[in-house]
Picture: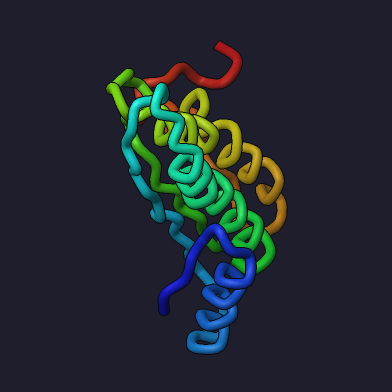
Length: 141
């Protein structure tokens, strides 16, 4: 099944089709992304908007639907990029979109979602281990 993660109706169809085919949703993976490269000075607003819509807005929509649809013990996997640690020319929109998902590691969207669903049957996520794998200090240090 194909869908555009920047469209709420497409995200809903992805989860609905999975439930219909398998009876439940055990795992959701958000790995959708675009990398439309251009210098910031060129101000290609349409490319910036598309990048944010898919990489940031789409990640939010996927997480929101996953929080609603995942079965007990289910898992959400957010795939992002190590590029936010770089300052490559032409990557402005891409880095901005991924930083919104990752921020300081994976905290803004992903770790908020972990906190929101931790007692809802997904189980606890070891944030310290997750952050250590990314080379980041544990929360509060």
